[in-house]
Amino acid sequence: MARVLVVDDANFMRVTLSTILQKESHDVVGEAGDGAEAVKLYKELNPDLVTMDITMPIMNGIDAIKEIKSFDPHATIIVCSAMGQQKVVVEAIESGAKDFIVKPFDESQVLETVNRFLK
Image (spheres, rainbow, N blue to C red):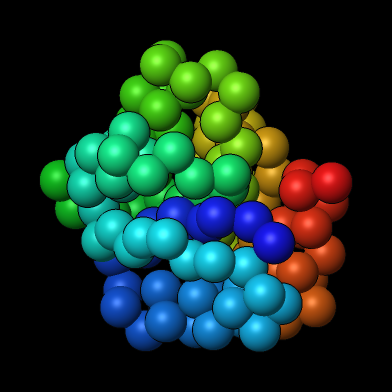
């Protein structure tokens, strides 16, 4: 069981992802609707894993990844992106994300990706 921070500006995406993770007995310790809130919560909660949307208001996912990685180089961050955003996903990986999950979420794909980094 991992402590997970779910970051997405769309509430229904946070709820969907949280539900998938909780069914697998992961503990969703926090949710953020933008990158700035994600960085703040990461510092407070120190989660085992972060799922990070890319396109968000205030601070986007790429900048949030860079900021989190700057003070915790071992942070495990998985990017969530829509199909057709390959360029952005590559930038996220180069910024320190470990992997990506494609929206709309496929439950087995989400769990396979998350569990790969929690062993």
